[in-house]
Image (cartoon, rainbow, N blue to C red; front, side, top):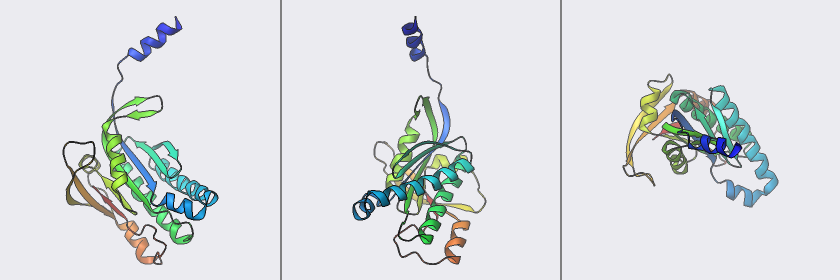
Length: 207
């Protein structure tokens, strides 16, 4: 009876949900680990996890996974995902400036689209795209798709600039790239000291 119930549950069609997915990781984490050791790397990863988690929760998102130097989160709102991404970048930049011996240069990717909820999170092309964009992002950059830009609409203190198209591995058609910036990050950078540690000094959201 239990087997039949389990089989029936597995055979039920899963309903897709439209969500924004954010993936963020620390640039140069492996090099940092090899140079500074596991204890320092663990401290860096815990600091990053705390900053990323706080920004995600503050914007109504949910952290689906934390793995060393990477954070994976989901949002019901594309605009909140963009704000969270820029705020993660800002928090990591400020932390890097305050503690230059433990720089946290992060790259972030965000996509918005359909995904299927599963026991351990979601499955869908939007997640794969967010991961691809994250891998392409340089330190201090938030890469997003056109879907994110359209769904987010106009955002106060955040602007987007068309940067042309790029081919993303695993996707047939080139995706339009957008570059945006947060005036909050720009103000913080102008009033703060320069960062000589190689940490993030940007503040842009791009696609």
